[in-house]
Image (cartoon, rainbow, N blue to C red):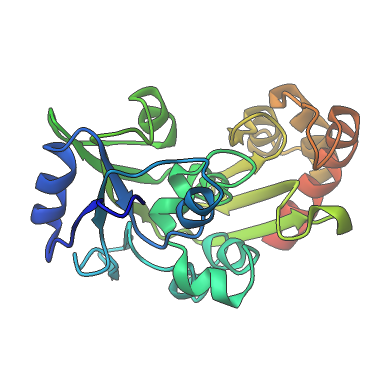
Length: 262
């Protein structure tokens, strides 16, 4: 941030929404685990910042079978939740990062960050966000289609039905340090249906519909794992090659389903 940057410190969600949506050049500051280093390296400039530390947007509540997590909830608090959210949050960074980083910041971060988009996609989570046109709700894909993280937008919370069971497995490689090359989340809903999502199998988190269909038809874990490639779009980056991603995706889908108890 510049030495003359204006900083707003809203004390409620409503004040935070007003501060962000009426200042098109405002930068939302929550945990700052990505923003602060980027600013220090001169990669981003901040003229106006809206700090969410006092906005009371960090609550986690459960009511009538649904879990709601405020966008400013720290990852450390999310680690205490059941799979797939809890293990995924625990897999992100070190303890210092988890104490500062927020679920909203993670959702809004570009790949290879944004680990929690996978579990939330598997859970069928509904996001709530605000911009100059009002308050909106929708899934992960709807949020991305609306423009995702952008100036003048504030993610408020995320909610989902508490599943009957969940699982999370992650591929970590020595050279990737704290970054996750691939993860698979699986969820069994109250109706018995299984949903599966992955990060690192495509440029963004993706549902593995073909694998889900195999299970719905009574197929085996091995058959479902093999079918997972149908929904993947593997790519090359510094974490892993497209060929490697293609090879290990069925393995991790199988592990997630075994952990789920399929």
